Image (tube, rainbow, N blue to C red; front, side):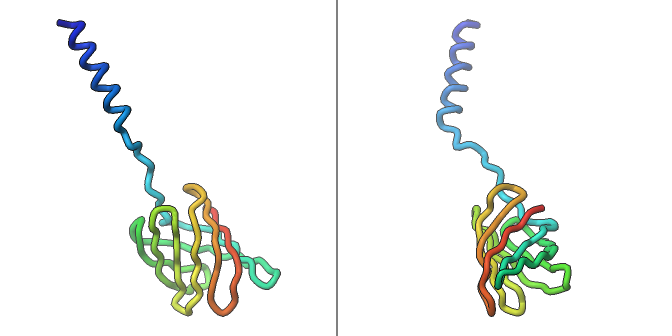
Length: 112
């Protein structure tokens, strides 16, 4: 009886491993980020604080400019109330990068 139970347990574990999709942790943008924006040959550094859910919310930077953000998988986007739009991708839990569109275009990186 013990042998059959052990074989059944091993088979169940094997099936669970085969059909497991994994549990990739969902990216959470909330918190304080240091954003370096490269425009016109200069790099401008700002601190941006994102608050809300993992999928959407609002932000404020260290100059008190505000806007809203969305996250879809590894894609991030945030738009300032004045119109600048930052879009990009997540590198890892503490790094992302992308492009800035608006009055002046450029690129950006962010770390926390």
